[in-house]
Length: 95
Image 1 (cartoon, helix red, strand yellow):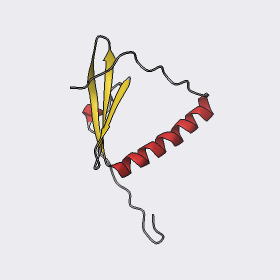
Image 2 (cartoon, rainbow, N blue to C red; image 1 turned 180 degrees about the horizontal axis):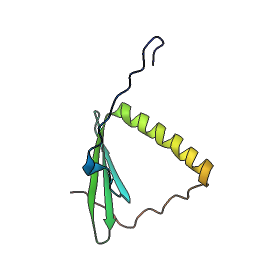
Image 3 (cartoon, rainbow, N blue to C red; image 1 turned 90 degrees about the horizontal axis):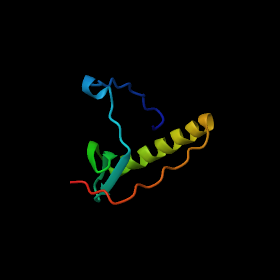
């Protein structure tokens, strides 16, 4: 924020149907010059389904990656190092 700018508070509505969230154990990422598409999946062989699709601008992806890295660092400081999950076997195709 530039000096002299007043910080504005924004009230965000949280719709009831989203409060429970969705579970994802896999993710697929695609991009064009203008946007990134993140498909969050719930895969339980032999099938899977997309539980959420998020479309972001490249600039916002940079901010998301930064805030995730910072929160991961804080989590590991509090609870210990997280071991990376194994890559799932096989190839997942999203239709």
